[in-house]
Length: 241
Image 1: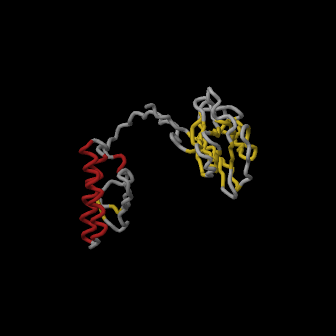
Image 2: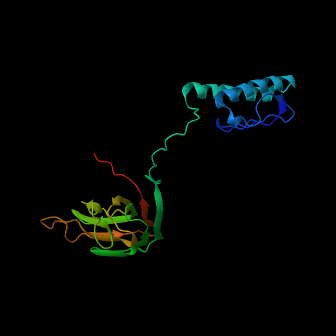
């Protein structure tokens, strides 16, 4: 007996539905067919014929695409009626992802400290996870004046150097040039527990065994130059050269 039915296919990435006015020989419950893939193709062949009969070329072309997709899936074995084996659980997301950025920025004040902390340059931030790293960046206007003198700016975390490396920038002046220019320090701090932390900036003469840089004239900031401190929490794997 011929029946008017609606057929939907989801397994090939699209939905194909015939008009309920089409007459086909497909079983009412096609999911109970002994060979589902072949049954589907047989139904689609009939649908193609019916669609051409009612002169609907666009719908007929769509059914042909579905049929071709099913034939390909049967040939390459990607369409199976058996229960598959569950795949392995994927890794947690956010690998290599930036989780949060905290920052502080301003125009001044300028600071003539030669040895000690630059009090106005600071950032307090909250680290969310124990296993993440912190990328710290500090940009500011720096100057050293003197003949054969050198100053060092150091970015510290909670008053100490990062465990894995020191974040420093050294500037040297040989001829009393008194040039103010922008410097940027960027580095990664690892092994830091979750919780509140403070990034601070310190200045000193560059250490040297013979104290050759003692008495260096250091200066932080200039006029309305902008300074910025950023702390970026991220999940990342450091490159091992």
